[in-house]
Amino acid sequence: MTGSITDVPGIKVGHAQDEMAATGCTVVLCEDGAVGGVDQGGGAPGTRETDPLRPMHLVQQVHAIVLSGGSAFGLDAATGVVRWLEARGVGFDVGVARVPIVPAAILFDLGLGSATVRPTAEMGFQACEAATEETPAEGSVGVGTGASVGKILGMEHAVKSGVGTASVRLNDELVVGALVAVNAMGDVVDPASGAPLAGPRAEAGSGESFVNTLDIMRQMARREDMGFGGGVNTVIGVVATNARLDKEGANKVAQMAQDGVARAVRPAHTMVDGDTLFALATGAVSADVNLIGAFAAEVVAQAIVRAVRRARSLAGLPGIADLEV
Image 1 (tube, helix red, strand yellow):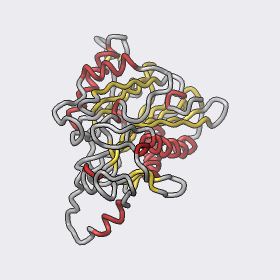
Image 2 (cartoon, rainbow, N blue to C red):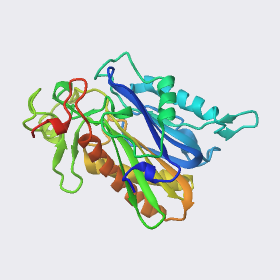
Image 3 (tube, helix red, strand yellow):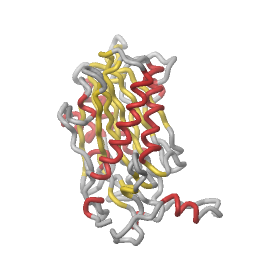
Image 4 (cartoon, rainbow, N blue to C red):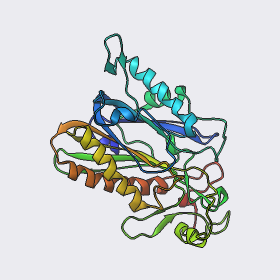
């Protein structure tokens, strides 16, 4: 066990990024196919191909999930993943071709680095080329390259975030893992104690202390529009397991996994967060959906904490490891 989503057999992860532009994408490959589900909890989502994951739809398996920066422009990265899979004969058989099923979700990172450079189909293809079963890099890489948190006072008060991963083995065979990109408007807290780990800095350019986002919101209570200086934000991620689930079960796991976002992000699921989690079940081991969902929330919370702790300073924003708080 490496403590990552790639502890789930059959799951690969690849990153591609442009550090100068502070954006990138991450692909989670399941080339042999996996039953997929999705839960969308925020008010500002950007997604692709999520309808096929719902019950009562024809397609039963997906072949990759793409997590991308670049706001809606970044959905182009999924086209490169589709092209890469098609070249390898992977996809839903429609007789005349195999069509890869590649759902995707994006986060808004246009306020950091360059707003005119976004993940492209070529970057998605590069992420597939880089994909491996080894432990994926965390922090300011891939989809996490331009991620940040603590933006209620504006980007000048924010801190760097990124992408994190975690896993748990529930018995000799059963594994649940998660990979999450954290770009929340609010704070990241320790799920066990509630202690703040990352949030808006009290003074721009200062690392002396974080301000509690909920306290700031309380001070703004008389306003009809609080503004949210950081713009559109979003936590997006993938939960994977080698459990055997149907589409109803996979969607339930994605829904339960959102509890991990609520445990580690304050506030979660706002109108400016497009919080979206996917679930993948590769189907090797019989397991109870309640067990998988409960621990999906646990590994999501752990992955969120790792995303901020592993993020390095980039594009003028400090990582928390570089701050004395």
